[in-house]
Length: 446
Image 1 (tube, one colour):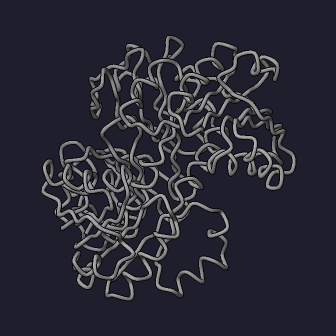
Image 2 (image 1 turned 90 degrees about the vertical axis):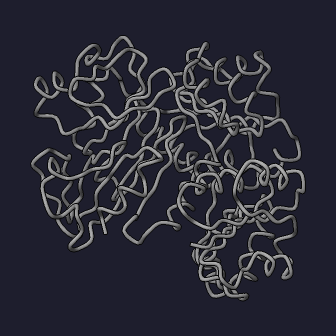
């Protein structure tokens, strides 16, 4: 595919890097000359300095031959105008990053589709929804739903309470063969690998497990995790992620939101109905104690400062908060954050890239999720008639090294992938793949 990415910093560059090994022709358009020089010196990507709302700039990027234009600048108005112009100038498909909830309404979506925009993506909205899901499954560090929850991928950090410690996968399967789950990947000492039968679970492992919804309770018991009943939450930061999260939670549980900026607090009072809004600095320990942090069930730090989010979550954890979630925008901090006691990390760049990269892949890929802090992705693919994956049982398939089939959804039934399972045309199949294996695994589904 010929792809144009319009950005103004890290999101566009991260998206381009996520696609650089996928045999696409990628052009980056960015207004920052320094960033463009860096891109040109470190990658083989074509880079253009300029304004993506300029027809001349888009023409320099050869927009009329573009299969896909993705606009991910921080200003959603620029993104909307860029994609509308790109479509009018000949681009086959366009995707715009947006920031406001208003633009996600069905009426506005229809209007933008009529103007030529194929897809609107809001990382803030998706991040808020992920936070809600994590509060529903409190024992997991990451939760990804596939086929409307018929299969779920959990990331669980194994501590000393886990019953599977020092057991191999073969041992676990023999002892708990009635359970519907499969280990997809283990992240240990900054290395990610797909486990085989003789591999052993160790304390501190980040284990990625696929399971059916009815088996979740048993899985959590094995991993030594106890779900927490979330009845109250404290949100730090009243920006887009914080305000959307508060809006979705305030009718379900007690919510307090701490925001440093007084003007933003005033605007939040018009947006939120039941949330207690507090104007203050969340790094002030006395303020947190005055707001009874020790009796809060969930602490969600989503300010624009990664450092503030990490530090306040650590303070919340030391005060006895059961579930902590931090927005960490610096990808280099993710691995560290997961190892110092923060339960869950949210990263908007990964969220945006996960949703947008999916549109660069074949029609058989219906879902794609980048896993946080490790070099691996989960995909949901539809097996096409006559594809290699439908010709023999799973144990006899030539699955690329660095990939594993985890589960299958057929009609309304879900199955965990076992050696003798025969995939059929039309089945939705959840796969975990390391980066070098993603496009190889695609080939056996078409």
